Image (cartoon, rainbow, N blue to C red; front, side, top):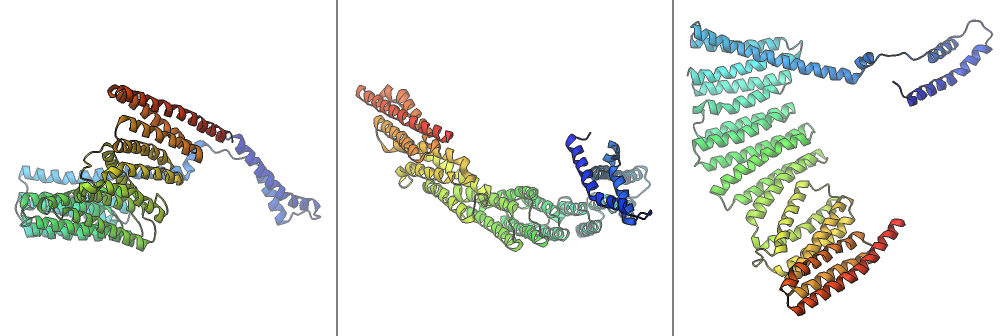
Amino acid sequence: MKTIEERLDQVEARLARIEQLLPAMTAVRGTVSDTPSQETASAVTELKRVNQPPVTVSPLTRKMTDPVYASASASSSMSVTQILGWTGATALVLAVAYLIRLAMDAGWLTPERQLGLAVLSGFALIGTGLKLRAADKQYASLLPAGGLVVLFLSIYGAHLYYHFIGVPMATGAVILTCLFALWLGRLFESEIYGLFAVTGSYSAPFLLHTLAGSVTDLVIYFSAWSVLFCLYSIWIGNRRPYLLAAYLALLGFHYLWRQMAPGEWEAAFAFQVIQFMIFIGGAVSLSIRHQRPLSREEAAVHLPLLLIFYALQYELLQRHLPALAPWIALGSAGVLLLGYAVAKRILERPLESGAVLVGAYASLALFHAGYMELLPDAFAPWVALLMLPALGLLFRTRGGVATVPWPVRVLIAIVFAINYQRVLVGANLDSVPAHQLLALLYAAELYVAYVLAQRMPALQSLATPALYVGHVALMSAAVQIFDGELAVSFAWGAIALACLALAFKYRDQALGKSSLLIFAASAAKVMLFDLSSATPLVRIGLLLVLGVTLYVGGWMYKKVDALDARQAAG
């Protein structure tokens, strides 16, 4: 049912149309001729049409003619069609399998005839699909897909079960079938054939056991297929074939190498390097060739692949080249960063998803290989102290927070948090140069971060946490610098009063309210810890310091609170 606003809009539109037709109606009244002119007749007809009541359209008719509904119906119909088509193709494949099995059980066919019938059935499905391609390309492509399954099974059966063909012939048949599958995929414009080819090619060494005669042969075999599938992905503009190939190549080769000759680690390392270069080149080339950077979903699928590569390679190098393992890991991050830089320069556009992907891998390499493996423990707190200024400089030079990938920001936050906690409690700091100054410098850096974060809209939410964490670092510095409970309590009170004074001077509400944390910590320290173990004279001094600081603090906080009230009223 139409709303009142919609009805008013229709009335206003009709009135506007009538006002446009009034001059023509005046000409009708003033004319001498009884026969109206063509212009007058059209004006009268238009006026009658405007004055006609709107045609009522039933909800069903409106729904059927709605283009959104029509496209949704077509999508639903296509999904049902695909389900029926795949089910039918699968049934045909099973029918071929059961026919051969029946012939075997009844003794109708010899093994040679059984395989021949299977091969003919596979080609029959492929030929039927090619015949029907002109009628419906997408639907007809399901039959050749089933035919490829039959061909792959026939080759593996002829080699593994019946031993009719040797390794060279079986390998050649697999290669030809995979190439045929790629051709069908291009012909039918369907990626399912490429995925079949990937699965068939990389599964061959598992099924054709004698194919894996040596690790070097396996490196050549897998690398050749990796190059082919990268080129195929670039040709069709789809990343799925080379992604599936990369996963199967890394995991499949690692398993076979461990089973065949785990001592030949040089060949395994060479294979990992070759695969890394091949697939980076394929990803970058596809983005440049089709002017299509990585999407967020594609980057999410690439990330586990990079993590698998990093884990497999570092485990290998840690066992055989422990001294070079961290440097090689950092080198792989550099190669990945170089590929990203090339793609960004050629495409001349921001590559947000690619930046996140590269940043995640580079952050992993920097944290694990750089921070945990290469960086001496004695210098870690100082490196963490310098990371915040470096990040701020990066924000300034690159024009904003969003220009730095979030994995890099997370890496810096983690490293800083680890060393902040270490400095705070004084854990294993004896070997750290000038460790007495660290807590004070961490506090100063966090206060500067608080001031700068207030000026940057993207970082304003981090300003208050930086302020409070800075207070804790400064209180810890007082504990490490001063000796005795009385001196520490006096220092904490002075810090709280200084916060209130600065808050009143610069009209900073957050700074003034943060002093309550220091007052509360100071009172808890005196009441719960200091008084129980102090001498009577020291107890008096502690209570005097606490009382004076709290009283003066309350008086100053009242002024800051009044300042807040005036600002709110203004």
